[in-house]
Image (cartoon, rainbow, N blue to C red):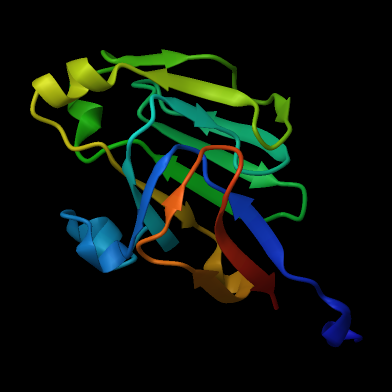
Amino acid sequence: MLKFLKKNCNIMSPISGKIMDLKDVPDKVFAEKMAGDGVAIFTYGDMVLAPADGIISIIFKSNHAVGMTLNNGVEILIHIGIDTVELEGSGFTRLIEEGKKVKGGDPIIKIDRKFIIEKGYSLITPVLITNTELIKDIDVNIGADVKAGEDILMTYRTK
């Protein structure tokens, strides 16, 4: 019913960096879209921001990943780095708690880039839509530089 009226929805970049195709992420779960569809960011920044308005549904105990439910029901996963769960929270500072409402641009996690990189971990950050059954299509600009909280990371339309 009136599907032509559905508008494009934007997800802002949660961290500054360069947009990468998921297929280039050095982790099979992300590269093969087993956890969801979206993009990755080769990060330059040290602050993870809410990419849209919604609720923080989960922050993993190790603070390396955040799940959000956006106001339209779309679920987002921000996974900071590759295999960074192994750091058991070191290098990550949680700035908000689960269940909190956020606006796009609100700080969620601060990362210690130097520490994480010195420990040998990549800070490539997948940003995924996990309930892809709600999504009709996703548009991204692979290779673009994005600034956290300012630039659009991806645009999607719901079914």
